[in-house]
Image (cartoon, rainbow, N blue to C red; front, side, top):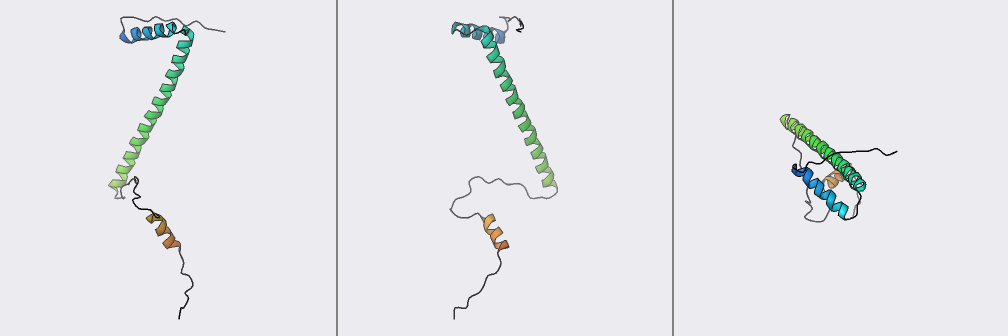
Length: 112
């Protein structure tokens, strides 16, 4: 069952006047008022979800900065970020160091 939704737009309010122009323009293109409002509401919900996500990312970023400050205060080495530091081809130092630590001496062959 459908429900009636009714509201007024005040042309003296710049945002509402702009909204009215959008409605008129879309109706001239053949869209029904119902379709325009449904699409606008669905897009609005999507934008709100994105804003919440960005807000959450901002909060997490702030928390990470606080943890970094706390670690720096107790003398833990600061975090570093690597950005395309591979200037020459080859294996990374961290990989080579782990292999050196795990390697065991092999057999020695006397060539004499």
